[in-house]
Image (cartoon, rainbow, N blue to C red; front, side, top):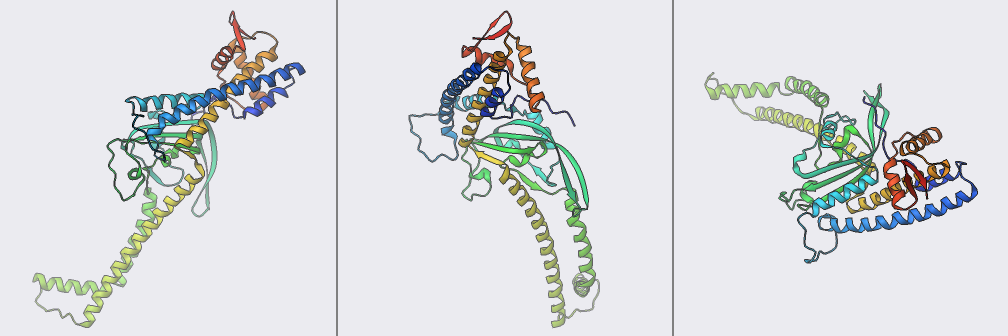
Length: 394
C-alpha cells in the first residue's frame, strides 16, 4: 500500500491551539496576555470575513438548492456563469478548510477497488452533469474482517477519509416522473446536491452517490446458485417423476411418436397439478432467497451510511465555513506564536520546520504546515513583516 501523504489539516480545536501555546512555557506573563488579546482579535477578524463568504454562498446556491422552501423573485434572474461561480467559491472555501480534491483519475481508481462490505457497488457518473469530490484527513487503518460465521479472520489495511464532501449537479434535461422511485427521479433537473460524510473507506466511495446500485459478487451468486441446482435436482427426482412421465406421454401422443392414447383422469390431473405446484414453489423459494440476500446487502449499506452522513446541501456550507474559519485562525496564531517566542527573526523554511517539529515532538502529530499562507495572513493583518528574507513580529 502506498504511503499516506502529510496533510495540511491541523487536528486540534482553535481553543486548544491557544491553550497549547500558552502552556508551552516559552512566553513571559506579559507576552501571554498579549497573545490572548491578539487571539481574540484574530478570531473576530476571520469570523467577520467568513460571515460575508457564507452569505455569498447562500445567494449563489439559492437557485439550485433542492431543499429550499422559500420563493424566488423574478428579479433574481439566473446568471449564465452562476454555477461556475458557485464551484469556484466553494472550491476556495474547501481549500481554506484544508480539504484536498479527489480528481477524476483518483476517483475512478477508488471506484474500481473491491468494497469492504463484501458487496458489489456500481455507480454511473455519466448520469450527472458534474461531480466533485473532496476529502480531509487521509489515514491508514486496519480492521479485522470475519467470514465463514466468524471462523476465519483476516486483517485488512485500507485508506480512510476522515471527511468527504460530495458535490453533484444534476442534468438540466434529466427525465423525471411522478412515481418518486429512485433518488434521481426526485431531484429537480439542474439542482445541486451537497453531502458531507465522515470515516469513508477509499474503496467504498461508491456508496456516497445517490444512484448507487447494489449487486452480488461471484461468490454470492455461487452461494445461491449451487444450492439452487442441488435442490432443483432433488425436486425433479422426487416430486416431479410422475408429472414428467405424464407430460412425456402427452407430448409423444400429440407429436405422433406413439399411438397409445393418454387418459387425463382425476389422478392424472392431481399429479399434474402437484408437479406444477412443486415447480412454482421451488422457483418462488429461489427468487425469495435472492431478493432477501440482496435486501440484506442494501440494509447493511443504508445502516452504514446513516452513521457516516454529517450534513446535506445548504447545511454543508455552515460546517465548511466553521472549518475554514478555525483553520485560518489556527494557522495565523501558530505562525505568530512561534515568531513571538523565538525572540529573533526567522526565515519561512525555518519557521515551518519549527512548527512541524513542535507538533511531532509534543503532540505526536505529523502535518504539512502551510507556512507561506500563514505568513501572508500575518502580513495582511500587520502582525509581521519580512526583512531581508527573515520574518519578525510587528
